[in-house]
Length: 553
Image 1 (spheres, helix red, strand yellow):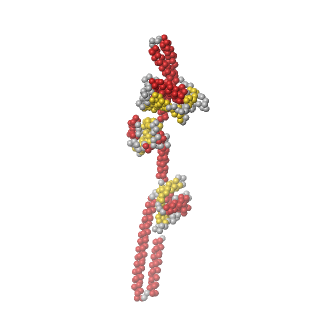
Image 2 (spheres, one colour):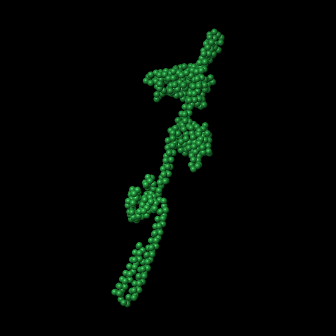
Image 3 (tube, one colour):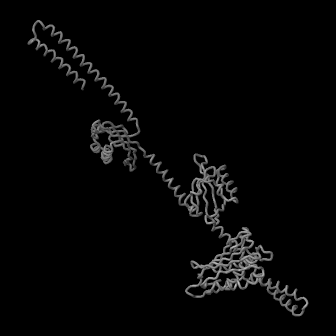
């Protein structure tokens, strides 16, 4: 259409030039110069016509090049999987790719020269989204530079698409708005994968952070790379004290090789390994852990080791108590059957020896030895019966200091015989507790007698008594030979004793007395240094309420 207009204008101007100049020549030109002026006019016409055609051809070439460039740009942006849009300074659409037109459901709309709010009239579902684009564009203009935002676009099927949108405002030299370039990439799938990854990460973090067990992570060299917070609660150590250190430097010698072999097996065979490990709490208390080591597999290759360690200290202690209880039960049954059978012939033997002693003055020494040994047998039988027969305990209020004084008075002569001194720190006030006094006397006789027998001439046995938090604590400390670690683990077991003539029943009876009083007994000992026996008893017994005396079996 424009080509025809240009040709028509050319013809009109040409005719006007020819007839107009001829008319002027006839009116005003001198006859002598008419021919020269006509030739000059013709030359001038040719020059003007030539310039016109040159200008026209140049414009046509520019237009053709512009169209080719536009086609290339259109092909480029239409081949992109991103939304591309060009707007002028007023926010009117100049160019948009097919992806963008399809995205807003305006494929059949003549969008050029229209604003987002105007295009919203042609799209029923995306009208709100188009109107919001004007608000978002204004933010880019106000920012004065490139902005990047995530925009969520609801879809007719109820889903949403997320676009990572970049908006580039362009300004003229005078600062006025020139245009706006908008590019938006669909990152819905990436966001979905990131969400799944974040959920997986949070699940892992929850499993790691909130596990009731200690969870540790190691690299392939055995270096600790991470520890969960439970480590601090269970062991008392800070995680920073262990992270970055090698496992071999932290495990006790007794367990080091076993643990390292298990870890190496995980690395080599990619299979789980289970083992038990003993460590010390920061306060020195031993802890037992049941550990399971698992390989961390990344891209079918082992990247590290994760170790789950459960504190089974109480479980093992309970198992040990049950084992001892089973032994006591067996001992009780054995004692009940044996003790009564021994008592009858024992009484007869003792009576006959006493009769012979009265009639035979010559062999008094032998008779006395026989009576002493029979009394010793009778004492052992009494201890057996104490284990076998449920004892009826009457709890009464008694001064623990008086009980200890009675025990010390009873054993003082034996201690003096071996040149051993007993020191007892007396409290200014009576220490009243609810107990069975005779049983506590038996308990402290056993403990103090063991301390005297373990001491050497010139040693001192210290007894201290303290009261706090509704409990009393009695500590018997000697400077004797001490107790080995192996014996400490088995102390209290029936018939297990380090003494040459010991029956192993004294400590068994002592443990039972403490247990019946809802107390605890602990041993701390080092060979050649001495032993501390710590007995803790409640001041008020659970079985006695409001001063009413009760019995316990």
